[in-house]
Image (tube, rainbow, N blue to C red; front, side, top):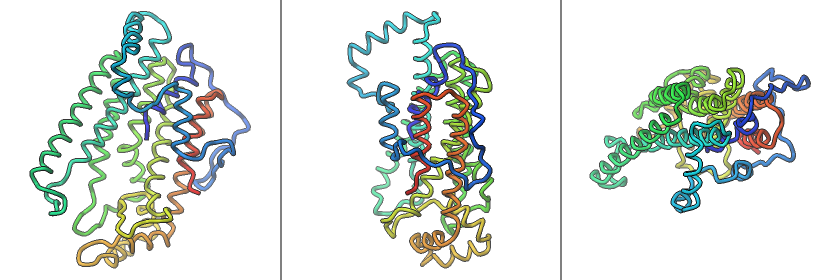
Length: 354
């Protein structure tokens, strides 16, 4: 997920460079009454993620991933940066926008640092085909140092924003991330049996590991734009439900792809599996895990077919669309605009399964 692309759009339709706009409510909009209800996708809305991101980038005005090194080192960009520094201490709206862009970059730094740290290899589980132990140890050291370096830069950037509430929000998001990742590591490699958590607990843990950073970063963007608590909460809700929908979409992919390799694995703590286990019951789930094992190794292809035959996958798709609906509800609080449409299209892309 491209966090910066989401964050950089929020201030645009909220009037970041001026006074906060009044919330816009439409009495004709339906509320969501059940998980299965889905507003559907506009025929004009782009369907694919890459297309959605490309169109959103046109509104922002530049690619929302990290700028190229050539761009960063160009004389033109350096000159612009020098001119912007002259605005420090003034009330010029351009300066506020540059604070929001910095926040988006900080959020992405934290996100990438976590991904780098997750890439650390468990040396106790190495196989001969993985490569020499010495090389793997070196790779782990590089991953730790690289992740720490990115986090240090993110902390430095946060301090430069000079906003204590934003610092508090991002610091709490980082704490949530660590707690969420800790909960994710509950699978026993020997038995393949996961904790019997249920979908409610799964949603709480998933918010910590996948939703808190985007939700609190969206809220922080509104804080930098000097919007009130109600607007900040709507931004938080959009980020939360958008992230949850994106995570569930990712979890569902191994079960709906037309061509799936028999050797392809999937997370036993993913949404379809947790829902399948909840429908099936703990005892029958343990039995299925046992039947899918051969010589101590899990046959993921066999287990995948068992899960696809149950209600877990379709229920996960419904849950993805439910969170998509909640994200769209949050956007209804803001005036219609090109940027709001771009954010809506991102939701449509994530909740599309056909």
